[in-house]
Image 1 (cartoon, rainbow, N blue to C red):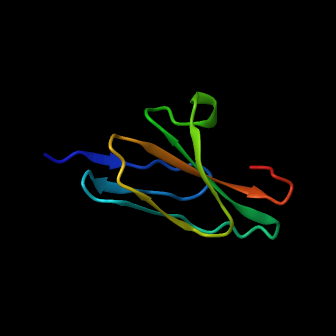
Image 2: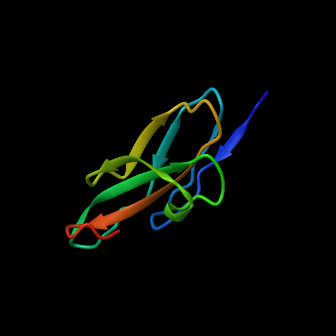
Length: 89
C-alpha cells in the first residue's frame, strides 16, 4: 500500500513528495535579503496548515536551505518561513 504526502509552500519555495516508508528531504530556495537570519520549518496534521491554524514549530535553522525530516508515521504538512535579524518572519 502506498500513501503519498505532499508538502505545501509558504514564503519559501518548498515541494515535498514521498511514499510512506521513505524519508523526507525538504529543500527550498534561499532568501537573498541581506538581513536574513534563518528559516523556521512548521508542521501540521491537516489543512489548512498555517501558524494561525495551529501549526507547530518543527525546527529553526540558520541559513541552511534543506532539512531531512525522517519518516513520519502519519500524514504531515510542512511550510517554511524566513526570518530576519529583528526576528520578523
